[in-house]
Length: 159
Image (cartoon, rainbow, N blue to C red):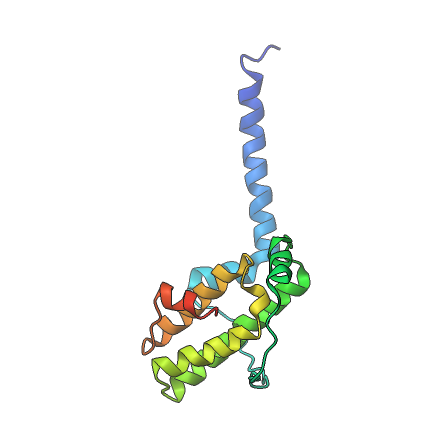
């Protein structure tokens, strides 16, 4: 028996099998995520983590220019530890902005508070995570609406 186009037959058989396989995998492993995505609800557990307030030091040693150049020229790849620190920072930012909204801080007070917080994470300043952290800050401020920060103001937080 001769088939006119074996590739057409192959695609006609393989396509439904592949689609069925991915539907099965999606249902088996991502059932809860799919339900929450289609229902529009997000079932995220809310954890409040108590963190100590950022410390402010009066006298700081400024690194020499040669030392700064060496640090900035080295390319570092983000690792698991850095990613965990970024996740901790985003949770801390979320809590800080929520607290500032509840206590009705002024915009200037919020900016100072965020600057002090980001000062503790200054090693993230020149990493790819900076953009996502800035987006997190803008999103959290927009969520409460009373203290909106523009993109330029968010960039100025990283002093």
